[in-house]
Image (cartoon, rainbow, N blue to C red; front, side, top):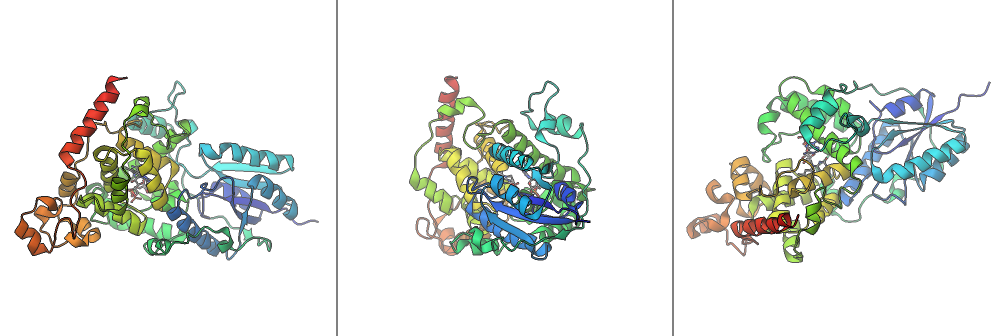
Length: 468
Ligand SMILES: Cc1cc2nc3c(=O)[nH]c(=O)nc-3n(C[C@H](O)[C@H](O)[C@H](O)COP(=O)(O)OP(=O)(O)OC[C@H]3O[C@@H](n4cnc5c(N)ncnc54)[C@H](O)[C@@H]3O)c2cc1C
């Protein structure tokens, strides 16, 4: 009798063993060749930017560990590699986690076609979202454009999220022709990557531990603390969810009791962003509101550079941009404030900010990032209205009243009293002197006047609106 044929599982943004429905299907074969592929035609497929690539490198190492050294890595076109591997190993089934990313749809279809032509069965199953975007349409078949009905009617009313499944048992096969992880060239050459990644524990085990700690220690206070950037009040699961080290179902079902509804609602925003991307494949390039195609964005490299480096002279903005650079992550409230400052006070195109975030965030995600930027810019679906312009001073005083966050990332003004911390340029000379701060030397003067730039943004929006 011949040995049963092994299956191949192609890992993408599902870098975990537990609650991975496509992997569970492959595991039924008993033996699984676990495969990861860097496709030269899809360089940003799994990690769209440099910080993401550093995370991916570590995530693959962690997955390899979970598989006891049997994660097989390759470079090449999956539509050629997978049929060749199937032929070499005598595999009859190839599985992968279905990704709703429109930029991958054509390639994935070509892979499935090539495998079927080679006589393989293909099993692609969703493990990335709680509700697949195709299933969350309105009764008339069109997609929801507003979050609340999307969540209430398109998601909750349709079906509860699937319960998570434990990791399946299988024998993981080792291919001697696979490449060592380092040969994939994912780790960025810049020493910055090492510093960023020092802030994170990567991989499925780390994700599960973080979720368990969050639920036990922070969930109950999440509604009250999630908006305070100085506190460690949110889950920080976003990179784990992006890379699929944790399934959204595991996060959803782990959350019960006080805070669970609020946390689940945030998970649903991720679903909403993905639904927007599926129905608007150019979400990162084109504003959903067409009048913004004509918006008079300013070309101002000096201000853009000051924003990127956290040298705008506005403490909350600078703290956020430095948190991003130092840790690869930024608190959600501060993402909104820094993005609003770029788009509205500086009138710089939201797409430039989206690209910077994409490169620097460890959780950079094609749907969440683009949707987040369009939301802040006011040009997206269910977006903040353009005329609602965050005042970064008032935001700082409200959400970082004791200055914990600003002092952590902008130490040069840490000795200023709370009263002046978020508006150092208005502090009396003797206060600045006592705190050892010379504006323009130790810390920049604001690169724009907040009130004047706010009026300029409103006037620009008015002109665009009138032409509609
Ligand atoms: C301009 C801008 C850019 C953003 N870019 C990204 C991005 O590239 N990747 C990313 O994952 N999130 C992005 N977000 C959304 C949000 O800021 C992060 O998901 C959140 O800060 C992650 O921290 P957390 O895991 O502690 O969140 P928690 O508050 O613990 O929330 C749990 C999970 O819900 C999801 N979530 C929470 N808030 C949002 C939201 N507003 N939109 C979509 N999903 C959400 C995330 O998966 C998150 O991990 C962006 C927001 C803005 C305003």
